Image (cartoon, rainbow, N blue to C red; front, side, top):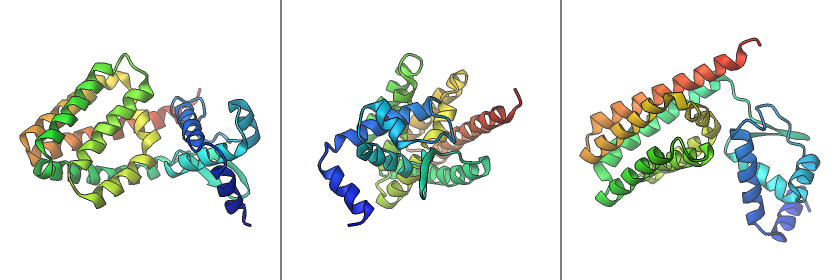
Length: 230
């Protein structure tokens, strides 16, 4: 029996919700900076710290690796992913095109009920932006973007967007943490929702493009700050 087969057999004997719960905890630690980029995730130490066996921890790490938050290494402990700015720019360029296309298609294909639901989500983000947990608000923000993509009614586009959203999860969170940029972010959301409500394809492209430009600017500022000498 291979090591992977043994892992699958071990996992089948435990509660499959445990790896998801552990992945959520580790994700929060990564997003909040408690586990910075490049940090080694040692199985024994983290399993002991979290009070679990190594098998669910290993599965939780696999979940985070699929999201681009963790880098797996052969015969070595995984580490918290540390992408370069060039890699981030390349992936954001793809995400930009996906979001612009999604916005256009949503203007054409979304039902009135879907648009109403997206509007409610945007209002909830605005109401909770300064008071709720940053990770929770960010999750709701990303869910709103995903709802716009879903409203495009293009399954292939939704699958591709979901993949890149996972890969850019931590990077986009860097931008979302800039609470001093809140007025621009919330203003972008208002413009996006207004354009979607009017089914104005050109206007939603403009607002989504501005939103992505602001996000990229925040991320570039984060990278510059991280490389400045103390």
